[in-house]
Image (cartoon, rainbow, N blue to C red; front, side, top):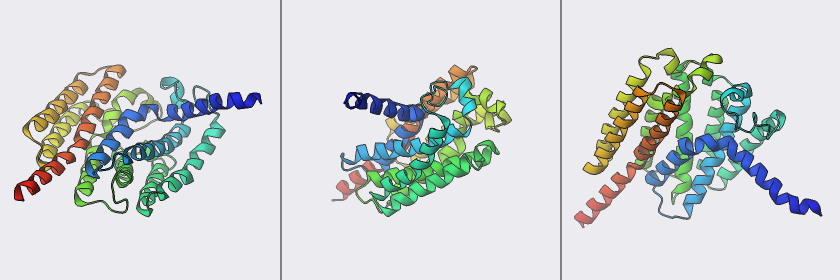
Length: 297
């Protein structure tokens, strides 16, 4: 009977291990994608929010377990709190978990709609291309493209789960996902500055490694361009437009002035604040349309 008393602790330990796989991507993936889904779907039923968060997190888990079983030696040096270097799970069991999560993600998605399952299948396919087929170590343009398409799959699935019609995305939701794909394709290198040392060791060709002098200035300019364009596209009011442009300027300056791994890490955190803000801008368009409809009536 002793095992009955130990069971809750064992379950909590396993859940914490799963959390550790995704810990670094909560703020970089789960939060921005949830914000986009809530703003672009749009979320009209608060009961859908926990579903959206869990669906996104569960698929992040699928990607992260795949990514972290690909080259566990890399994490031994700079990410020792992850489950594999921390010896919380064996490599064999992590591989079993990695492939068990694939049908689990599809089953979860099928509970919402066939279209949500298609988004999940696309994400799994892109995960295999990125990890097992080596796109992560290829040319930076290929890496950025696969990353951007992966986020499209995330966002389509999350938006379907968040919306009232889980079989369909309207034009606003589609445009917001398209804009997000462009943002990720042109700014995903923001996550690579802090990992230059580790990426150099394994021969990864990221923009900060290939173009060290141009990487930060071009990132700063692209962030500013996106901020101006998105503010215009989504009919943001003056305060909102100034806020996202000021934030983009701050993020760009942080990357330009950063010299150490910790400084780049802080810059990346600030980038994710900007990203979440940018993903929330479709809500401005929803509010603008609603105000126009009220004025017309």
